Amino acid sequence: MSKISPQAIIEDGAVIGENVEIAPFCFISGEAKIGDGTTIAHGACIYGKTTIGKNNRIFSHAVLGSIPQDLKFNGEEVELIIGDNNTIREFTLLNPGTEGGGRQTIVGDNNLLMGYVHLGHDVKVGNNCIIANSAGIAGHVEIGNHVVIGAGGTGVHQFCKIGDYAMIGAASALTQDIPPYCMAEGNRASLRGLNLNGLRRKMNREDINELKAAYRKLFESGQPLKDTAAELLENTQNEHVKNICNFALETTRGIPYERKNI
Image 1: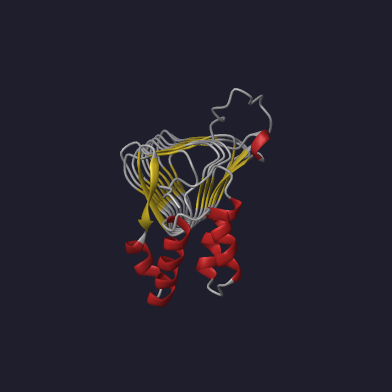
Image 2 (image 1 turned 60 degrees about the horizontal axis):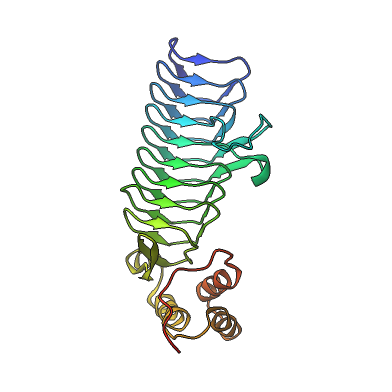
């Protein structure tokens, strides 16, 4: 049975699941759907066509689904979709999509968004990510699975892509794509090596060693990046090496690393 404060404002049409808790002074849009077991703390606002999955924890004064911060937005139907088991901390701001970006902002499962995080319009976040305090993610950014983005006002430029298991250091400014398994930091952020601490928690030593060898060839050999990625791709059976090579071949914003003289 759900526990809904009489001091919360819930518009007609809202769909509220089982065992949902909604605290005083919350606002829930008539187009919203709230999944089973989700808790929404006092003062949080759920606007527009926002779908929230099961067992999410939404803390005080989070604002989810308010119209995108895009001057081209003209009231078209857009949405915010949030999966299961996410923790969304105080004063976060998650905007829905726009017509030009597919109309959807999507957050997967088991993510932690710390205080004051902003996800712009049309952002895609995978599963098991940590986005730390005050990080700002601009529109159209794509974030993979098991990604960590540091605190201290870290900013990610629009249309950037961050691959699986990547880590962005605190107080960084990211304007290009970061491949899977890599670590980047700085203003402007550039590659600092593999995210070895994260990889050791998830991968066996053989896979990590193959990634180390691939990283050296891709980013430390001084050879043309895409030529090297294509050559590696033809000569590996390792799925992780294939992932980083494909990312290098498909990047549109480029990868920030120190290019050595050949």
